[in-house]
Length: 383
Image (cartoon, rainbow, N blue to C red):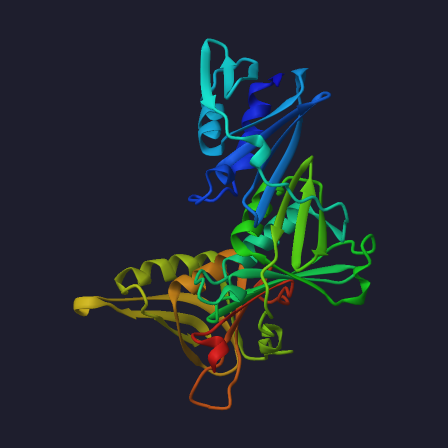
């Protein structure tokens, strides 16, 4: 194998290929990046049996062939090469990289032992890259990071012909975002198509394809394995889906809430951040809402206390709730609007506030946006 490739193109391709590689693996082969040179293209791939990444770039191929080298080391090298064409070749059991006056010789892993990378040719639907990236960023923050319950460590995709819903929860909060998508190409019109994607994987996919015009999504079942693929700009990521039944969290969202407060989003974020400085890690902030004002109060360690009042427009009776500040801040930063609505739901116990429904709105007196909804309550799913 021997090829010449643009330095920046090579660096970007290697960076993409290694993003989803595991930090630690018992099989050294799975820490590698596979280089395949043929025709006028260079294909770089990585695979750890759960997630794969594949990208194709233009290159001048002098000799077709394949090579397998350490992904992290290759990425470090590619990122620091001088601005000059990159020449990569294989000699016996080594991969040689030269760029300007810099040269490297890396040990090559046995290509013949590398597993076959999954390919998903079917397209289930197509979604705008920027909208998909925004939706993933908004919802994935609510996914659980506790591997004890794998089913809630993912983001649930729920597809119909014209809409794609993204849902995540960690039992204490639920995030839901609806975006437009074209499912007619894959026959998703029955509304029953779902896919539970690991949050870490879909988060990287969202970042990678944020500037893509469209992202093609494919979902296939092979034997006992369900795989999803995301493709745009000659880049593809595939992932095994999480097995299990995602909790029916949509039913927790009320059809309508007439008791709510509207506040300036930035002001509430700043006040919550300041008042929360005196709190211990898991402590909650007390929010008292009256017409015209919301008062934040915190009692920390060693009698440390803090309070602040911000403007608020209240519809309904005065209200007091206690919320974990970090969970609230996550929701506030995800609404992407000048104003935020905190709607107060009811429970069977009149002395116990229900979940707080957070949505964005463009003006103080306007209607709330329902495209992104964030439901927050301690032990939400355990009530």
